[in-house]
Image 1 (cartoon, helix red, strand yellow):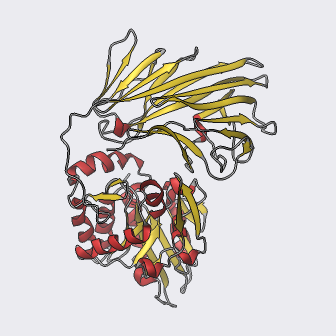
Image 2 (spheres, rainbow, N blue to C red):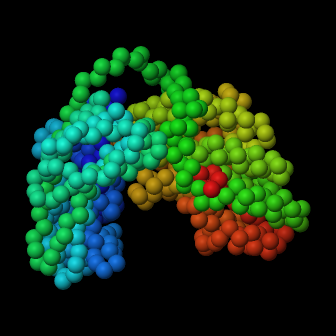
Length: 512
């Protein structure tokens, strides 16, 4: 298995030439990453860097200020083994960053160095998060610190503690050695969520360092990664003829434990809220349809509603939604996200589906609900080198094999894709956004094939709506305007016959 650890987590939208001299920020970036096969290397075209990794916190009020932002220029220099960012003179931040440099020292070592100066007389400190370790990497891991007992990363959440100048995190496959070269005190914060083994979240390494007017800020920290020889038995090679591993993966109980139960805490609305919505839509003045039927439907004497659910994280709450809709004799569409953890696991050019989930998909289909594909093909193309047209054809064939006819698609708003200025709708030529993007030295095309060529009859984003309601992000919006649940019901009651309405919900936000 190939391990990939993203090292850079700062807000860089960098330049377009790997060996460039100083440049201002443009659209695509670089990051330094590590894999078991390739060790450390610079990867082109990745927007890894998150702006909350390095910022100034100012008192009173602890207001955070970015060191750089896409609205303000920074200067980026890249080379064969380093990336360096400097604050441009035009940037109005109170902290002038002389240098933020990430460099590959050797095959196993990367160093992050920060130099700067506070230029305003304010009480402030620098907060920096150089490394995050994903929870999925930490099963059966230990943290070894100088002059302290070994800490086990297990089933209980760790108390936050301060790291010594040198410490290591050991997993069954990898050893991470963190070496602090300057005087900062770094904290180790456990940001995992239940279940703490195999669940979501991360272990975060961060520092909060006070700064004063015109004082120099210097920081240097290294990460050394060493592979640990695996004692696991070798497995048979996967079938390479298509994108599907022939064997199944996790059982339903394990899927719930690992991926869906930890998401229960994300709920913003109650099931009673959902019943109140359904009670309104069950009135005779509405005609509620799955999106497949809604696309070409006409009902001048009704408020015509196309109802859909994008299952980003929680298919089991979707099952509850379907149960309530049956109670009110309503039908809708459920779009299954093929890049979700509940759906399966991905490898370069490969997917290994959780076939135990098929019974849930078939149950929804047999109850009269439409099953569609929640398209995240740009992510799969760029992350796993999966060819979208072939993959979607195999997806549709896979559903057909288990007795489900797929007609439509709703594109997923993946943060990974949006951060690159892209959208999964761009995969289809009807949206007129076809272009080529370069990633890891390879060029990828999108937007050259139509919905029909992919095998779809429609896109949920081409349905000719007058009104559009969505709970995206756990907040209701009507045509982009934020609303409360009660305000949504009030607006629905005022709609005139002949109005075409699409209502989108995400199951993960329900069941509070």
